[in-house]
Length: 193
Image 1: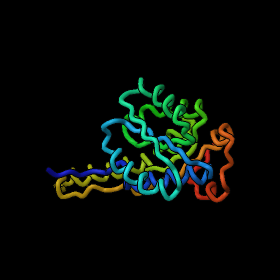
Image 2 (image 1 turned 180 degrees about the vertical axis):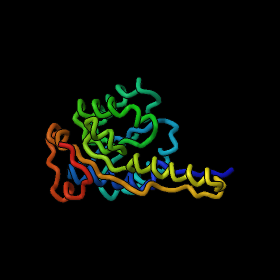
Image 3 (image 1 turned 45 degrees about the vertical axis):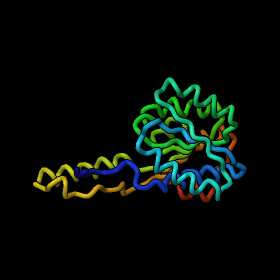
């Protein structure tokens, strides 16, 4: 009945910040597709955060569920049919493992993408705001060390990631015809050229 470790997402509010990033990059943005793996535990808190902020930004959300990589082609066809102007990807194992296919399809459909993984931006996505996976591994190692030294795992709290990074891909921005505001570039932890 007890759980311990390091969570993947520190806060569902990160999704609201990802949506704000898209709006800052494309001020006329009004329709955003939300790509999510059906049944993933991150979907409910992510959608709650997005749905709280979307009306303030005057953005209509278009949730798109996928069950496997085979669904991605039809998911992006639905985004095009619904005239999505941007894409927010919900974090999870599926979206991490399918990141190359997701960013390739986003670029092919000319959709600016806001992603949870640095690795997705390195693969060609536009922008990510998410935990540093290397730092999370270090946090996990510290947990293992405590347990090896005798700590009861049930007594250790679940920790949140300690570091979030904003990563921007300028090459992708150029391909999408977007200009990154200097203030956003200044905030970025890393800019991919």
